[in-house]
Image (cartoon, rainbow, N blue to C red):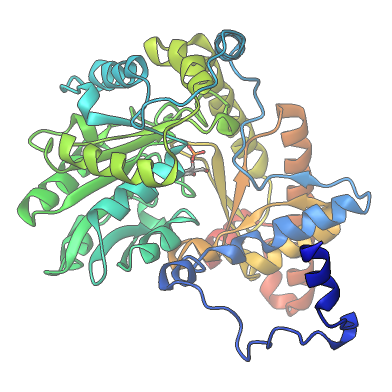
Length: 443
Ligand SMILES: Cc1ncc(COP(=O)(O)O)c(C=O)c1O
């Protein structure tokens, strides 16, 4: 009764009279780190986003934008993952990864590079993306500088910025096939430099750094006491020459961090399985970060990929061969595109099309290509000034569809060339329409 009386005694207030919480004059604040994450290559995705919008309206758009392999996952991996789930492998797992999986990654690295690698040198990560983020958080902080050859993969600037560090770019010159200029790299080193961060095979340019270049970068790191971070997510997709892993370099064991994954090579980006390999003290620190953030990885995924770590699956060689063949066929087809030059990749899954001779900036080229031919490609300016005037074409479609899209690009380039020639005074168009000689002279 007492309680009822107490309630009855409370004065009745109609809802409207309840005073609202005072409204904040300013929006709620976020941490400096959260704000620094907003640095991104978002501009690169404007055409892709527009293409997605058009597709939602029913338009038949061909997407050559994203690096998501179109192959099926290897059957043995699917079976192992499903079987692990059926065996109830759904609980927590050790932060650094299942012991058998860490051992298998270490053995794989040792097998491929000829240099010792132990489980203590390896930590499982949910993809190479998380790997580079975690590694960089552990080696660079406020005021540090990280040297990165440019153009850069679109997520890297935010990863560096999240640490409070500063990205120092060294151009990868198209005229050198986007290979590094070691003298420029050395000139970029200051007392604040903590790391050189490379990516080979390289996204978006497709460059595969050779042994001499890798050794020269290693020598710079030793001479200036720097970390070497190497993103090798396309390690199984090198065509022009063999991939050289940073792990294979001499006298670098105390300062090399290799990040990789099975996302591309095994066509399983959705598995989110990758790793960081480095000196044991680095792995201990990354483990602390994983404890705070991830609390370990899914055991059924780790057991699923075990067969792919223990041996080189035939599907990986087949996938590499498929991309090599697509790249060759696509390059041959694009020879016919006036005022454009296709740079066949030395590795990876993208081709760069140099559209500078068309006179259109890459964004305008990509926008018109989408409008007029319903083909979506990625303008590269947002990847860095050295890639300005190039568009990135993902080779992730079966060959007939890829070639059909290629023919549309050729038709579009021919139309652009006609427009340009029609706009020119008669005297300047000697040599005929779409003459490659004319193009070469202008390029
Ligand atoms: C250079 C580079 N690094 C990392 C990633 C992310 O890989 P993962 O799916 O293993 O996180 C990508 C994906 O496209 C990439 O191109």
